[in-house]
Length: 84
Image 1 (cartoon, rainbow, N blue to C red):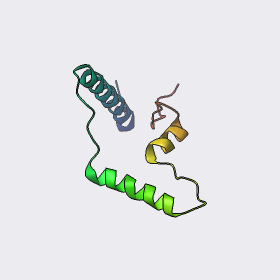
Image 2: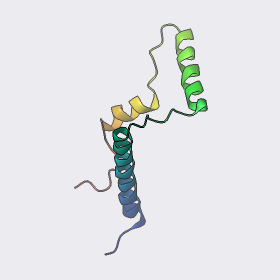
Image 3: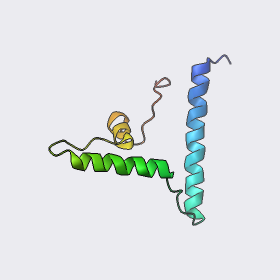
């Protein structure tokens, strides 16, 4: 079977997503708590929220997760090559 590199990359990416989701389900089953975001991420989000509060009259900017959901819908993939 002849496969180009992009198609192989998409398949690997989807499989990795499935494996991560499976690990998360097993982690919840085992009673593990989800990992906390790194300090730099938490600090970055706090600074963004502070900046938004200091700018009256501006709408709240979408964070990265909300923007991805707005573009691709809930659970949507960023790879659209294998749609049929």
